[in-house]
Image (cartoon, rainbow, N blue to C red; front, side, top):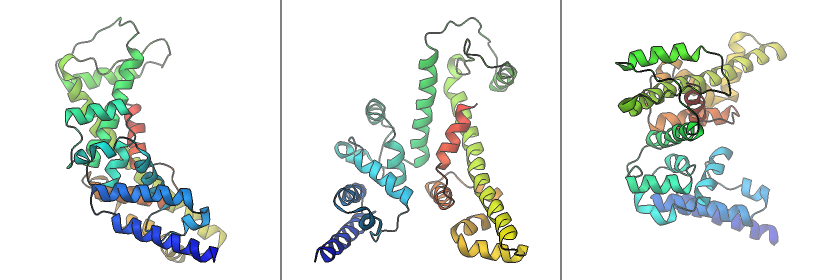
Amino acid sequence: MNNLFKSNEVLEFSSGIMSAWNRSVEGILEACHLLIKAKALLKNDEFQSLNIPFSKRTVNRLLSIGNYPFFATHVSHLPQSWGTLYVLSRLDVNEFQAAIKKGSIYPGMTRNEANYLLLEKAVSRQRKETQNMIKVVSIYVKNDDDAELVLKKLKSIPKSDNFYIDNNSYANRVDRLNSKRIKSASKKGRKKAIDAIYHFRFEKLKDLRANQNLTVKSANRKFNETWGEVADFIEAGKRSMIDFPFSENAENMIDTTLSCIGSDKTEFDFIRECFECM
């Protein structure tokens, strides 16, 4: 009787989550809150058996959205995309409220714009880390190309904890330079994310040929059967994916494939690493 009751609970939660899902911003939040409730009430194996089309990583992100305390009071400002909501859930209360007040968070907000907020956070952190340091040198340049040339020369100096090279100190050009860095980091980060997927395929094909004594053709067929979503992604072509518009669908496609190969990183994680190294 207890097993039957638990099965009914699983069915009810599954039905409720899918009924609310993608209906609206309120629906997405409702689905996230139902996931939180289901995780609290169901046993682990029952929770895993929920009939919902989400990967484990996606479920964890939806739980993060549901646990974020500032969405409920700002629903009218929120974008209708769970991916964008997840990025916003990584802002602290002051950053979130400042973005709301500024109008940066609005119903039509894209995931790229949300990622930009996080990268701005990284810029702000850099400034705070250096605010108590003494500036001993100022270099003034006439254009951004000269600024980039100077930066390359300065970055060739061995790193030290005793000094920091500020690449955001160009008077009225700070925003332009940061925008240029973000665009560059976005493309480099996407390339690294895609390279990780191709590397996974390379290693799996090598293992299949070595361990199962398969021909190249047979190994490819086996790979496509086992990791169909990864094969579909690769079939789209590496170059076309790098140049693909930075849209919500493109990022979701890459993140889904990264999840399939067991990566603990998202495309944005790769982008952020590139940004912080620039």
